[in-house]
Amino acid sequence: MSYSNEDLAAVPLEKRTWETWNFAALWISMSLCIPTYMLASSLIEGGMNWWQAILTIFLGNSIVLVPMLLNGHAGTKYGIPFPVFARASFGIRGANLPALLRAIVACGWFGIQTWIGGFAIFQLCKVWLPEIAGLPAIFPPSWGLETGPAITFFAFWLLNMYVVYLGVDSIKKLLVFKAIFLPVAALALLWWAISASHGLGPILNQPSKFTNSDQFWAYFFPALTGMVGFWATLSLNIPDFTRYAKSQKAQIRGQAIGLPASMTLFAFVGVAVTSATTIVFGQTIWDPVILAGKFDSKILVTLAMTAVAISTLATNIAANIVSPANDFSNLSPQKISFRVGGYITGVIGILIFPWKLIADPQGYIFKWLIAYSSLLGPIGGIMIADYFLIRKKELKLADLYSADGQYWFTNGVNTNAVIAFLIGVLPNAPGFLAEIGWLDKNGSLRHLVGLYHYAWFIGFFVSAFVYWALMKKSSSRS
Image (cartoon, rainbow, N blue to C red; front, side, top):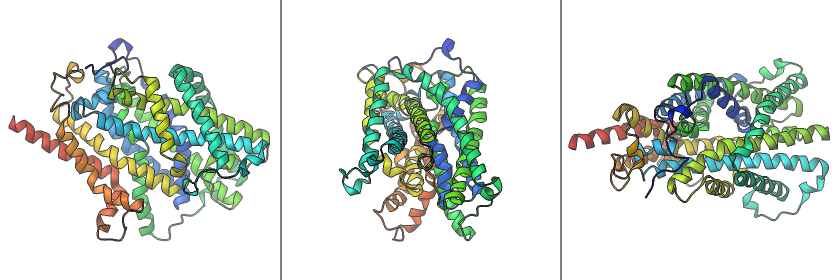
């Protein structure tokens, strides 16, 4: 059986051409998206004031930059993508575990972005056809899905699948449009916020909703974990991009310049605009698509919603299709192509009920961002411990694609990595079960429930240590 194909093979040296500015541009483009805006504004809705929200976002992105750079090292040195890099620690077959978990999270992000784009189309339609908002319900109440938004969501989903059918090259022009439009739109929104609020003063004077420090810290730590979790996916599969880097210096400088700064600056726009909605409308509107739908001009709403839909389409294909398509391809390199992997991503993106994930800030941060960070943190810890502590940055490239090499372990699986992963996830399980209502937060496991607020950190360090200890023990026996 072959464990390679054109997408998984190492990039040759002559094709590794990305410079510092390429990585900086990548992160600026990735950061300028509606979920980033909603991430910042959700902290305001959760009770923070502007500087608390901005500081939390900056800290979270500075923290996640560290594993981003560490995992990116292997991609640059060997030209390998994430699923292949994971084979060094999990085994050639065992790498399907982190690849699948990473892919499923990407499917969730695909669903969220598709919902945002579809809802933008709904807002556009509602301006010209108000009756679409009053269509009779056809979905069970428990789904929380109205008929009008559902129609535009599925229409936008079909458009995404058509682009997958055409191939990723078809998205290049849309990415250029997005890179031009979103910064302009962000500045326009910021101008509106300042103008409507009569200056930045009223916005920056909006107080925190926390009445004491205990309330603040109780919200801050899970929020920080959520901020780290926002890019926990990319902190794993960053080799998918750094495999094209010209040098380690290029990927390190580019990411350090591009990630924290662009996330923080665009987040400030979300914070300022959300704070302004409290002043202007008397209520906090954390979703920019809903906000744009409140403007009086039909032409303005139409232009804004069309632009949001197109830029979201570009983001979705680039950020949420390419990586999971590679991950699904790793399951069966000879049978699952990019196109098939894209279709799989699309179906799972619907089944994850994305409209419920972003219906409120609590669900967005606590049930989505923190939940998947509890799974991806352990994987990151294992991969970094293996590469830097066990293998000292030395991999045998040919063995990563061979059943006869050192990364085959036992039937293709490194049981040490699987054990370390499960042990890293275990402490966070009670908190997650309590968050979704399956466990009493104040019951006998209440002390363990609180660990969930630090899910990514606990999972990362626990799994890294357990993996290191198990591998050291295994090597001493051999």
